Length: 137
Image (tube, rainbow, N blue to C red; front, side, top):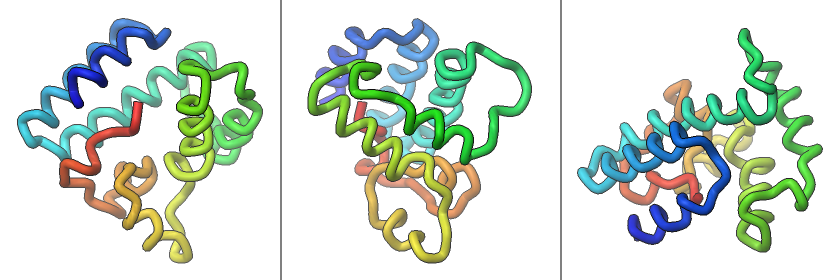
């Protein structure tokens, strides 16, 4: 699978820094450093988001609600990759990756193999297994 992920990565229109960071995450995963993978990828995702969605603005990125509103404005045509995979990723972004962890959804977030940013960054869920390593690129 890492070979397929590397091949798919080459087709994405993201900068070299992001591609290198993802390749490093794959190396960490191959060496069973699963906690490191999740903790490495979210800051890189946010760097890319800052550059792509906020035009590289310095300072604090707007509130979670502001980010959610921005994501909800994305259209299917904005996706790379396009097609069903891109639509699936947009839905995953909207419905899981960046939602805040609350008492009512914590068990659902813990049960999902795909890491949630709020849970990972704030130590609410520990992502330590092979199944947690990918953000499904």
